[in-house]
Image (cartoon, rainbow, N blue to C red; front, side, top):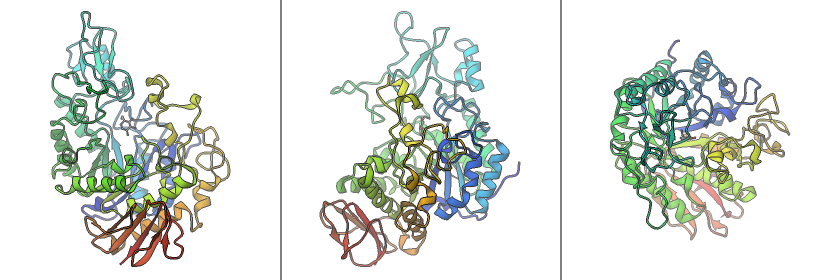
Length: 525
Ligand code: NOJ
């Protein structure tokens, strides 16, 4: 194994970067088994270079029994055969670097798979043993210990505890196949550091840290107090003892100390914390370089909602060295074309939202298929795979709809994604016009919009932190970047006049000097 340095060394290269999230199962299948893989990513590097992204975030490709599609990791320092092998990963990394594309990978520290050798050992060991002390094994409550040790729910539904044959219970904030690791145990921290070094030594440029706000649990694992009005627990909010415990920051400092031993590496945290001040704590100089800000991902389509999302995100980073980090879609939430209403309206809004996201100062994450305008797919019950579907007793359909494979070419499934039509999730009919091939060369396509936007974003108008809000018609947002870029977004029910300046890019047709409904424009003053 040889470490592969990127072609250029640029400290803080990530500060204004556009990251492209590759959901590995769904991006491109290079081996013909219907599941995306590392070979598929490698084959599509020319496409990604042409799109103009700076870096990739590749979702977990480690050995896994796939109870949560790779977020249940059996060996964090290997490659799942379905996705490839280590030489294949090294080759992908080398090719990406040759094209000037950085590669970041997912780190899943909060839990392991139940197939991890540590968990197998824990199950075979008695209560109180060192093997059990890497996880949270506890006696149950109630006279016979047959109730869970506390009242925490799993994020995927049902209790966060599962009982083992000797009567003890173990904690899993997600599926039972994802037992939580106990970072108060130094051996667990040391192993995480080994994983970081393993991949850093191979040359990866950084990590996306899964459930970064959940890695520390409160001592004694006390019950949570249900909200008085609903009887339900606050979801990831204050009072949710599963997440955002103060001592989680010590762990992020440990991670950062390792990263700082390697030049130009970074970490972005998945931090579902909506209190601006508490979120900013993760971005202190010795913690994460970036934290996803999920406000755009969760905001409704409306001027007040989007402005509040932007302001909260900028307030969060203001007291920190970090730039803001904008997300419109990912593999856990409905795609924004669908969130904004679907069909023609959803697509129109998604085009405008892309110009908003890419005009804002800081980092942008583009989820694979955003650049094609992919919507969610209504999948039939029998093909659903997300553990949420089973764990919720078939009341929540889960996240499969936003994970359908990416269409590359052709007029019918599998649209060039694979050589087999038997893709891991079925691809719907009618996606011919959505394929990358069909959109290439069509000046009005979503793909062309993204390509142009990413190219323009490298220009001087996009420099500088912060935004100056400009006066705008009712229902519109307008702001200026220090470098001179003006962005106007029209969320009102009628067209509005173009602001002054030269139009650089528009999300929809600008006719008679009017920005259309649900449209956005970029101008240089
Ligand atoms: C967040 C990931 O994005 C999601 O897909 C996964 O199910 C959970 N963390 C658990 O790892």
